[in-house]
Length: 351
Image (cartoon, rainbow, N blue to C red; front, side, top):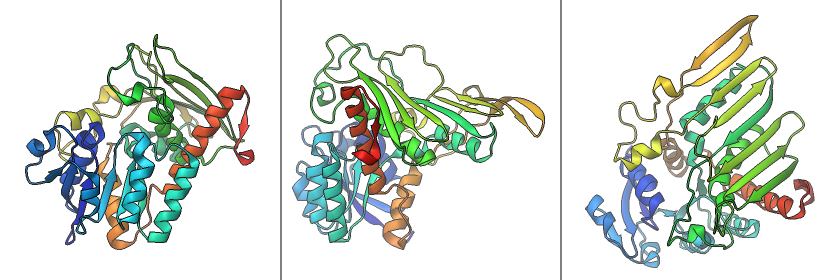
């Protein structure tokens, strides 16, 4: 790659430290030029050749920076993304895109007016297990798919102190945090649903934000259920696919996040691969033959997100994660809250 895109990261919290900085610094197409770290001094230790500053506005004023990653707390996504767009920067926003659909629409219109790129970091599209179930569906291994269930469960039976994520404010809670991944994946697989029916709960004692949800997305050809809870100590399958010929079940979480936390190098030998013990189980009839056994997991590849960002900016190729898709996720999240509050099914066409 002859051209390097000079890039700035707006925050060095968990997503900056674990995802964006390692991916960008190990990608041949990007030069990580600036990191904003407001109070700590961790970035300068890990990236001594990168400029570490305290102020986002100073980064946006740098004319050399072509791409800005907005990975600050969720309630600041809209304001800072709009500032970056108005400064003429290409922008990647950490999920969830925005807190309201109106904010999403405003950002998309601003990006259009300024003729800059706007995308959202939906990295879970490149989870090993999600790539695998896409192949299972494409290869028709369970026959016509009739039921799909996806989970993003954790076990955290306490309220994490000193974090905005546990405060009862707009845009906090499990639905925005984990639900934005599950909803995005469902829409990638099946398109926009006709309607939403959902239940949201606060299960942990002393909790202020939702930490459990059960979402049913209405399609005329498949039953889709998305679930998450912070009180699942013994996890069941993350994905369940049931078709007219059989089933595919997949347990566990993609290994890339843990590898990045441990200092692993994206793209190194064996990156994103799972041991055989973690492979999913297929039980199906294919061509009149009953087949039961494990399906090798496709290696995950978060770097593919930034491959596409580079190809779009430099070569004009189509974005994989479009802002319009992220806005659809926010629309569905709004419908989920409405369904829970009104105890009824919400048709998206009527919103």
